[in-house]
Length: 303
Image 1: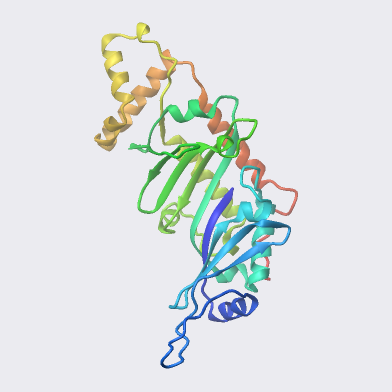
Image 2: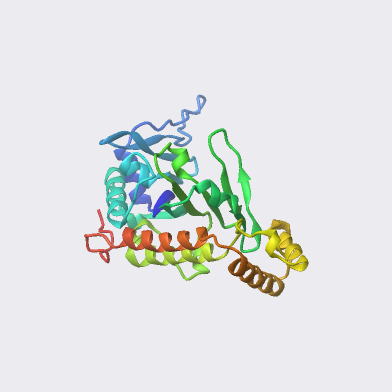
């Protein structure tokens, strides 16, 4: 469930141990005084079993050291397969061993969590029906190979896209993820994740619940509705509900009642079940990722 991550080694002793274990940093020199001004970017941690994968390390003159990359890719070389709790622990242990630090000495500053879902329908059809999330219209980030649908706030970014198309897979694979850029977004939900040692069963279960709640906030179209079955007022209402700007300008109470009316309209005249399938797949996938054969409640051990 966890993919991209960025963390800081905040212990001065841990930082010194980590620096002694790595090569490749460049230290600028004052040519007049001979003073070493600091240590600049950069080196990498590699998985010896997968030469193509890495985690980037950057050390700034201020002394702050950040490690970033995809834990999923670091362990498996790709991030379209499953990545369960056992895999997560394995990746973290390997990285911390190379850095000679404990997971509890690594403070998380950014984190991505999400699910890869094998759907029975074309992913493009799901993306084409996205209207809003929590009354915020989806934006589209265009690229040559695929498009990302996203919604962004100051604390997090939600991305939904076709991962099967990204990796040219022979099956449909929908990616739904949330990237938290400020931990206060999690604290507001009662999720206290500070260091790598906090990425245990209980906290991942809370992240899974957050993903399910996020999906419940999606305002989703149903293109099976036939205009011929609607009254004049129903046609006007449906046109409004399908317009993302309609949801942005409404107040909370008005939006709640409008969404309820939209759901009733879809239930009566529509037949598509894309969103319902995604909700069920998400719940099933999260349960599978958490319920591994290892002792799921065991916290990450200190290296």
